[in-house]
Image 1 (cartoon, helix red, strand yellow):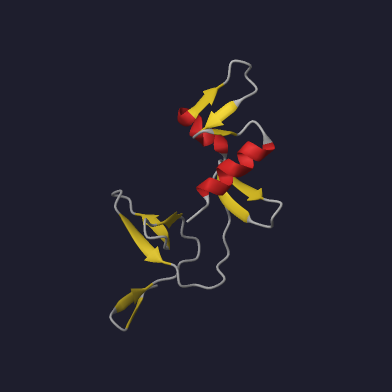
Image 2 (cartoon, rainbow, N blue to C red):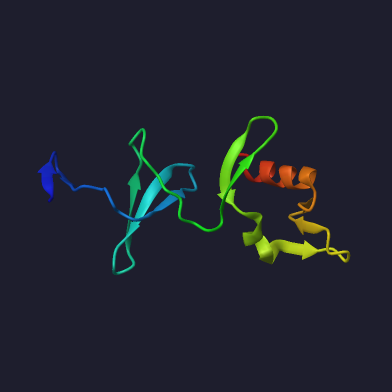
Length: 113
């Protein structure tokens, strides 16, 4: 059911599948694709929306200083990974993510705004 109110079309969002995106300006939006592959980006104004994460590569990171983030798992960066000769060293963007310190530094560098 759609209703018209103040020059807008309103329709229930419950059950709608989409993608949470962050614009280049840092704003979060909810992207909903149509059957013809066009999409609408909705600004998120809702203050306590329930969310379920379905992405296989989504990973939570919790750091000793209390900082926590949600990002891709570092396995998605295979194109940017160089494996060392000993196969124990993995370098991503000059960070040795095969060590806890290197991985922490890599994640911290990705999450700086």
